Amino acid sequence: MTQNELDALLAEEIARRLPVLGSGELGEMRAALHTLKGSSAMAGHADLSLVIAQLSGRLRRGDAAAARDAARLLADALERLRSGKPTFDTRWPEPPPGLAPSEIEPSYRSEYLAAVRERIEELDGADTAAIVRAIHSIKGTAAAVGDDLTAWYCHGLEAALKAEGFDWGSLPRHASLLVSLVEDGASALETLRARGRPRSVMPASTRRPSLSAEEDTGEHTVRVQGVSLERVLERIELIRLAHDEVSGSAAVAEREVVRLRELRVALAEALRLLGPPRPWGPPAKALGTIGAVARALAQTADDLEHGGALGRKGADRLKSAAADVRREIALVRRTTLSAILSKIGAAAERLAEREGRDVRVLVSASDAPVEREVAERLVDPLMQLARNALAHGIEPPEERKARGKPPTGCLSLSGERAGDWLRIVCEDDGRGVDIESVRRSAVERGSISAEAARAASDDELLALLFVPGLTTKREADLLAGRGLGLDLALNTVRRLGGSIRLERRPGSGLRATLELPSERWTTEVLWLRAGSWELALPVSFTGRLAPASADKPPIPLLICLGEAPATRPELSLELSLRGIPTVSVGVDAVGEVEECNLRPLPALLSQSGPFSGAILRGDGSLLLALDAALLAVRAWALA
Image 1 (cartoon, rainbow, N blue to C red):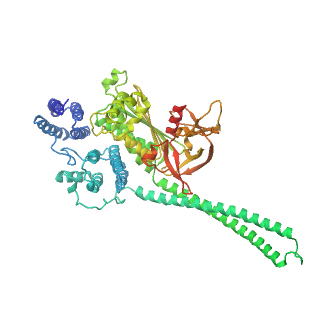
Image 2: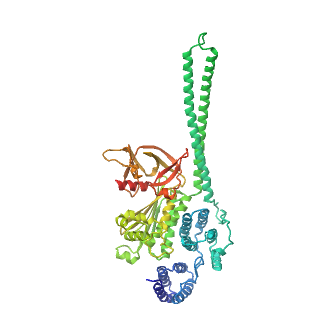
Image 3: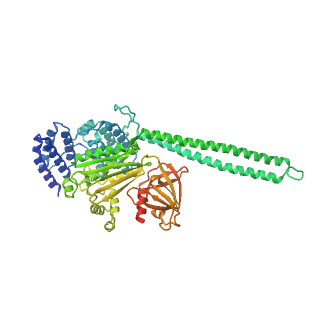
């Protein structure tokens, strides 16, 4: 169907529903706006759909002027459609008529503003992919708190960033405007309307937007920028490395003590063999010198031992102090798992209501503490998963009834903390993923050849949903359709040292499981050795360790890494993950459990194997941490 045909249908729908807006019956008016909002989105007029959604919200809240404003706006849109024109004569970033500032929950405002400012800080010196991720993250955060205005602006900015000829010199002005939209949406909206383009918002300048952490919110709290806290934590990491260096020096001193005492014993034995001074033997002076050297060696060994003990004691104090400071800072920026998911659940309900989806959102989570930095970065991937469920998964009531399902769909968010790891599950009871549509879209985009697509399993095709640009939705709107979301969601979770796993249940929806460290900076790992590899595996995913059995041999870890083992592994380590059958991998040796900092991997390295991050050791070496979910899937497939 052509755009002209879609516009004609939309014009007929508006003409049919307009008289209802003057009827005065609240239920009928809300139903009319709901229908027109959906029709506008289907016809490709996302801005009109957004404005109608806001007017519907005003009507629901009892705003007497909402119906009159809606009738006026729709009458103008109808006239333009009948004249062969678009519904609005505005073009992003000029706001469409009727777009209003959003009402943000006061309890969210301070935290929301701080999160947006932190994402803006990331734009400085970032590459294109990182800039797109940051803008998409702001869009997700805005949607989570109900800020439609900022979400609209980010949606348009995403499209502009992907277009040819984008003026990258204008990025600081876009960043400044984003901060203004969040701080004072009404003033920023009027500025956009009056001047039409962001270049008029402020004089051209290379100056970074002001990102002061000071804000008068009326709350008895102190806001500290996460960027500043991250810098403090980086200094603490240097203290930890200093601890490793001092500990290493103490170990060297201990070895030297042993060597010096061995030399003293050797000298004492030489003196015994030489015997007392005799006229025909060694002179007394020589024997005295040797004795003095032996006593000096003994004293040096004692002093070095004492110094080594003091060094080790000081190193332990450094480590303990760094850990205490890190815990105190974590307490400053800490929230709970239930608070995160409750916020996402409320945002999902608003999205469902705005899009006219009959959906019930269930939230089940403990009050387990989570570092606020992790919580803020989780908003975007979780909102993306919720949007996907609403846009692609949950069917309209009529279709659900035909499938024998309740007319009201269900979106479930659950979470738990296992050790120092979080496990969050987002699942819906919709139609699931149309695997054939994924297969067709992947071939059309060139992500996979037609032959490989035909041979690919369902799980392999599900993994393609994380490919940038791949989408099964024909039209892009504010809810979904650009094919950017899952890729950016996975990237965000991986930068936190975690993973996302998709599971398809035909006819029963889709389940997405996120697993990541609860503290961004530290996690406990078990060191493994396989061939020449030394790797870290998060302790939370380790199961039983036993000698490798010849009757039921484990899958060698080296094979999972794409290498052929020279010898049979000596140990079998069980991987423990929910949703994946139990499987064991074979390793040559197991080291100690250590608390480490998990650092993000470059994109190419993260795609080269089942890795989730990197760990910097005290000796300066950089070792890889295993992605337990990817490793388990590989081992299970090989088994």
